[in-house]
Image 1 (spheres, rainbow, N blue to C red):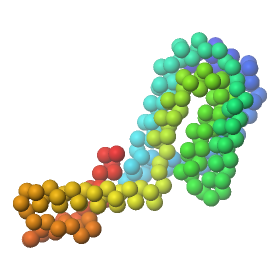
Image 2 (cartoon, rainbow, N blue to C red; image 1 turned 180 degrees about the vertical axis):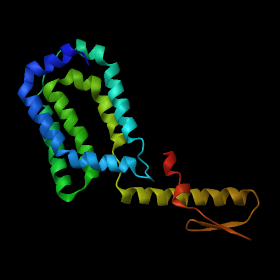
Image 3 (spheres, rainbow, N blue to C red; image 1 turned 90 degrees about the horizontal axis):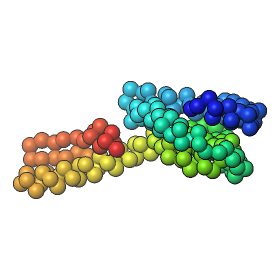
Image 4 (cartoon, rainbow, N blue to C red; image 1 turned 45 degrees about the horizontal axis):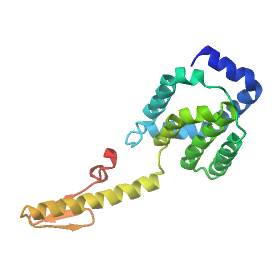
Amino acid sequence: MDKKFIKNILEQNHAQLIILSILTITAYIPTFFWMIDRWTLADTYYSHGLLILLISIFIVWQERKKLNKLKIKPSNFGWIFFISGISIHIVSALWQVYFSSGFSLILVLLGLLLLFLGKDYLTRLLFPICFLIFMIPLPLVSLADVSFRLKILASKASVAIVNSLGVTAAREGSVIQTKHSYLILEDSCSGINSL
């Protein structure tokens, strides 16, 4: 961003911006640690999380010249997004459901953007902010469910293909049996990494 752009923001709402930013970052520290932990696990499906964040930052950086030309027109409608996001975060933090807390962060960012910069900036930055949704890890329970369903789908498709080739095969759960052998489809064969 340009120094002139940052100076304009700070001049207009200096104290509010600093206070809300510090409070927001502080409130989301456990969520940030949870996301980083999930991104860096050995068998994670979310190793792309940090890359999503960097891509969003890069998109904003590419838009910097267009953003500098926009007028800052703060909108109080930002409070709707901000308060909704913070409310979801508080409930999520109390129940330690970091997944929904991660999604509430998107609402909070949209709210802050409207509060301090306005609708024109929101329109320009909506994609990079909403793109951040892909960095938020799904709950492990839902991943297990999706993985199981994909594994069953893969085993059904495999049996259909093998049978169409003239080899008799039967499926029981995720186990494929032929006349002389059997094959067990594991979670890594479910295809969830390809999604």
